[in-house]
Image (cartoon, rainbow, N blue to C red; front, side, top):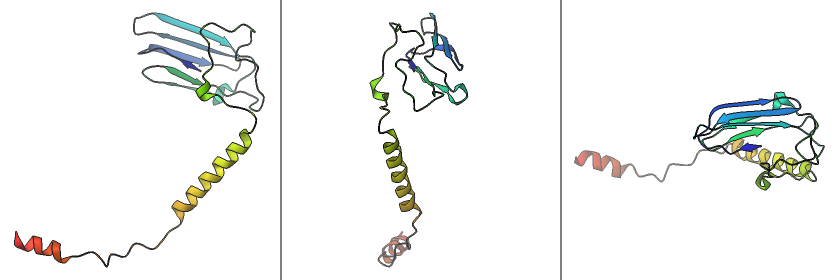
Length: 137
């Protein structure tokens, strides 16, 4: 979840098992407050928030990760200020295949980095030009 409040102050985020409470002051001094009752239980210990100059982002992990929710809120009514960020949308089907491919790709990268090759030969470097420059000065 992202709360877009530029240059916010007095930011308070409380993530509990069934709700999120957010409050702050905008750059104009306006006090903002939101309380969201989640559709189902979340893992409050594994959830966190991050503040930037333009927004406060809350990373909320569901208690049952592989279960899709029909909506974010407990109530069937969508708040007017709430919208879906399709840039961060996750499709539940095929996630395991994507995660496995990412792990395999990471393992290949580690293998390439950890494979030691002999150091390059330095026979073709010319020491004469450096020593000639040093003696002529």
